[in-house]
Length: 296
Image (cartoon, rainbow, N blue to C red):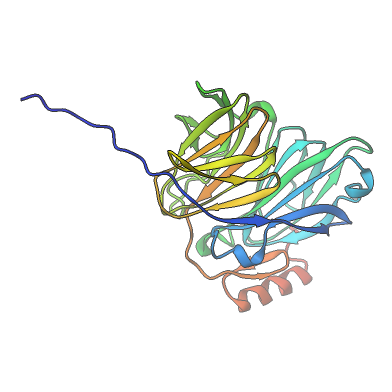
């Protein structure tokens, strides 16, 4: 008899919830949409916040984000268009430009600013807050400034171009390697561009929390061969924790973020720019900041 092997059939992740962002202003009056809010932090652990900013009116972004502190998590800023200067109390600085990523680890505490270096034109991008495990919350601050040309890209046979910011897509590793004992697999952060009408597939660990965000046109989460749900423009779709892959279908010109990560399953205590595990740790963060301990 001849042994035969069969390819396992992967079950698609289904859509659990659609989220409409909340319009707000932050920093020195920067207009933005807060998509992932505090009420979703436990559901989307380890992700704490997702903001989208985008305007061609300098009054909406000109004030930028002057000096402000952080402790206990990481910020990931992805610039679609525009120029923003980063400086922080740990001595890091860089210019974030079209298509680039700034990945900052606040750790035990950092004061930084993000200021526009333009007086006209479009400013568009995203900022994601990513929690740190309890054992790493007081680590040394870190910073990476990743230029657009340093971000690997994949072009699928179906005509989908994927910018791999973090994680792995079709065997290509992302620009940021983040695997640690707490995160044995890198956080997945993909920017998916549909160059033509197509379907895109990405394996996902069923235990990982995941969501998609459509920022150009609209996309469909394919749940079964004859079943799909639409994620409209400027909507976040939270994916159920079941199935081994996500399948997206969209027309040419659609752009979607796909973000997934291993949950920490730890308490989340937040007070503004500080994210720790207990109220006592938050009080200590405020005291340390007031005592000037965030500046070497």
